[in-house]
Amino acid sequence: MNRLQLEHIIRAAGDIADDDEIIMVGSSAVLCQFPDVPEQIIRSVEADIFPKNRPELAPLIDGSIGELSPFQQTFGYYAHGVGPETAGNLPSGWEKRLVALHNENSRGS
Image (cartoon, rainbow, N blue to C red):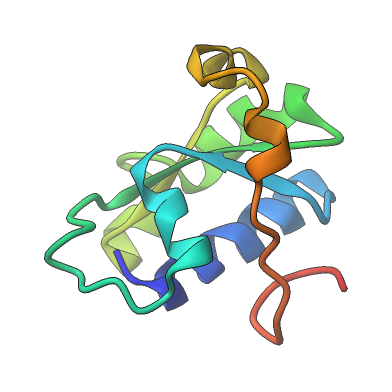
């Protein structure tokens, strides 16, 4: 996955959940801070995400643009809608280390 593909997933998930804040956990999140990471390093075709303000809609994201969806079949990558409890496995204080991604390819300001 590359940064433009990640931005596509974030934009689609934001539209599905009607939420401008999408939290990403997992290896693909490195692309938020380091957009030019070579694709050989981030070999994943999925992004684990949940809408910050509407986490109950993660299953809708998973069903709409998740694994084996028409979205994946069309683009070759997909979102894995997870719940906030997935972030519970992260070290304490992870929220303070979030990196915001705002640009012309993302939803919100």
